[in-house]
Image (cartoon, rainbow, N blue to C red; front, top):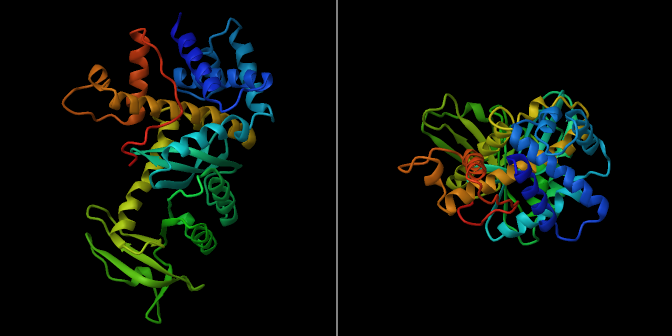
Amino acid sequence: MNDNLRRYRAIKRALVQLYPSEPTSRLLQSLHVMAMFINGIVASKSTHTRDVAKKTPTGAKVTSREKQLSRWYQNERVSYERHMLPFVETLLAGLASQTLVLAIDGSEVGRNCVTLMVSLIYQKRAIPLLWVVRTGSKGHFPADIHIELLTEVQELLPADASVILLGDGEFDSIELQSFLQDAGWDYVCRTAKNTHVCLDDEWQSLEHYELWPGSCLPLYDALFTRQAYGPVLVILWWQTGYKEPVYLVTNLSVMEEACLWYRKRMRIETFFSDQKSRGFHLHKSRIRDPQRLARLMIAACFAYIWIIYLGTLCIHDGWVKHIHRTDRCDLSLFQLGMDLLEYFLNEFLPIPVDFRLPVSSPT
């Protein structure tokens, strides 16, 4: 049995077994095609339909496989709610005993499309939870789209989950901060240096405060922007080795805690780089329709979560010594997962497939 067929059958079996209810015949067929997509994305390290089709283990011609895969992401019955939501809910339920650190960010995908994504920070990686895709080049989504997406995320989370949201300067709007406060979530978001705050009845732009490399200045009980939202904690933070400071706004009360959490925000960038230049080249899929691209991202995100699972398995079950140096490991979870999969294939070992992640070390 060749590698493509072994990998595909393992993915197909896991999708059906882990689905929380017995799939209908139509859904079962759709899950099988999705398994082809996941398999082909991982095998080809591409989301381009023809590249994926070449790695699809069927007896049909490549052009026929390509049409079958294209019909899948063109099909309006293929949806996040039916195909991915049950797996995401299971994943989150398994991790809900700890603080769930979420990051929100946007990135260009496909051809002339941009996605807004909410991810879960997990072991220096960002696990995709939910996204929206729109036509256009990279730019800011309006605050109502931020809130709409996060409202959907809120519905996915266990009711008693402890949540903190991290975001860059796009996500400092008063509307979003109010939503997060009402939701009972903590947040740390970047803001602009020309933001005005009021402290002790005096308004001043953040850029007018004196800072130097290595300094960190907290502004407690500040009113944020001319809308006087707050009180909030505003932090002016110039990390050693950086060319300029960052400015943060948070509803946390401790400066050190807010800075500690914000350091994790950049991990969503690792997801986009793993999905793009270092991994599956999502930006080269050539799909220009936002809805079709959003469906393709279901398969791409499944592929990513599976590889991260393999990365955790590599560490927890002691496989690192078989694929990497023993004195230290300088590979990411994504790289470990890809290498472990190749090792299993080369050694004709069973291929484990799961879309759940262990609770240990969720940083």
